[in-house]
Figure 1 (cartoon, helix red, strand yellow):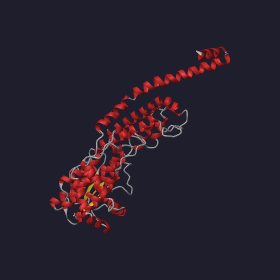
Figure 2 (cartoon, rainbow, N blue to C red):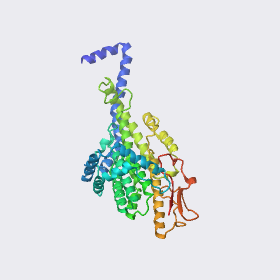
Figure 3 (tube, rainbow, N blue to C red):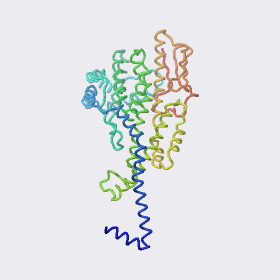
Figure 4 (cartoon, helix red, strand yellow):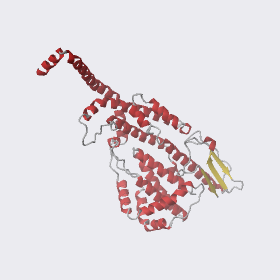
Length: 433
């Protein structure tokens, strides 16, 4: 009652009347925005919430299985002998093999060979455990949606993949085909174990592992059909990649919604401004609208990319289109997109890996035919066609004396994004009888 009397008294004073009416109007508008804007943004956010639930259903929280636990224990017990020096030696040995265009395999460094000999029992245990597929601990999807949460550690799998590959090379040089297959089977299981993981880091490590395997496998002769087909099976990787990018999309949308990047507001700050929580409260509906616009635009582009011949896409044009497709008022989304965080991120690396395996498949196919007939076939039906990218073409040739065959990518069909750098596998391979 006292407040009402004071307001009534002030209203009688003309100098305060306009100010009070203005303030009441502003407060009314803010409250309207807070209520109606909040309700409206929550309604629009329903598809995003459904997407989170769909990922939770597909990737439920599960504990690591016995195989994964045994493997982690073996890795831990082996760390003391598997020194950084040996790991570096293995990487330095495999690196030049990546760029080698022939079947040439150089001798293993003495330190690596010595490690393989001394730790043969541990390696046998690792191969034995990997006869079953590891299932790594799977956290609830909300753990991945937290922009501040650390990703699960995956790099150790790439390290042990390289160890198994050099073990396979040693077996191959000693003409021990059973040992070659055992090591390749174990390496394939490591790669396969990442398929059930939803995070984008799992996809990138998968690409790293698969490229390392392709660089070695294409140099081998006489691989059994079963292990060849397992290693060559990369057809599901685009859909797995898209699912992980969908998770990344949700992570970005969640970060925008939580307003982590609003200047002057840090939800983790020990000494926030007195007005920061109030500012955050009124900006929350707007933050939700920013996140929804980002998520819907990204999902639309992701769907479009998956329906196209990726090799014919202009990624820079897609990047520009994506930025201009966001709402003009979504300045935060546009700023995020300009950093390269969009639906096309990493697809070039994925398709490079798949093209590497397509060349490897053709090399192994020709080697198998030559093993049956004792000579390189003069021609192979449809070997020039690509199933990865319909626009690509391969060129198969046999030397005049019939001693060497070459398979290479036809340069006129190479897309701009398929540029080669020092770490890429060559898109040509030569083999001699």
